[in-house]
Length: 207
DNA sequence: ACCGGGATGTTCT
DNA sequence: GAACATCCCGGTG
Image (cartoon, rainbow, N blue to C red; front, side, top):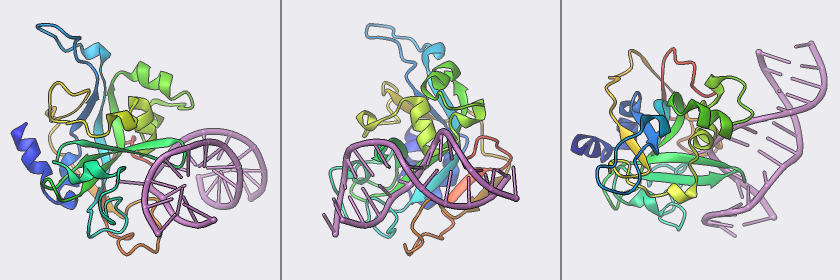
């Protein structure tokens, strides 16, 4: 886990493609008591297939551009923690914090390929007609995983956290595509920068 | 298939 | 008061 933490202290533009094929896991830990065991059936997880970098101070599209606020304070903390925000009055989006403590930066998780807990995902996402609609967007995946502001700030690299980031041995994707970020006001100076990337040939990407 | 609009509330100016 | 790192539904072709 030390290697992953070191990786995440870099510029989010560098980190973003390296997060593809890593795994995000919610729950699945045993209850309190000695010998708490992992219960795979109880976890909800997915393989990361699409991400976007938000660079922080140099990036007017980043929530951290204008400095720390109550909402974005986690972005200024240590790397490897989860930043969750609420937007459009009904959706949550989750990010993995990058860069060393004191310097803001994050990678937005835009899409997952579901791995475990598909039944839980389906029950939370009633409108999803196909399994590929469960996590194919930043708001969708937070709903599928049950992530909200109460998870803001959790350490993804602590094995006892309710949300973890794992290298599950999928290895790097065979092919990665790069393009501009989505949903940004065109007036922003960095709106057209190619800071989104995704796994080519993956049916679970957004859009 | 593509396109347009409405939902809904937090955050910051 | 405006903007918002979105999603879903209902229109049309």
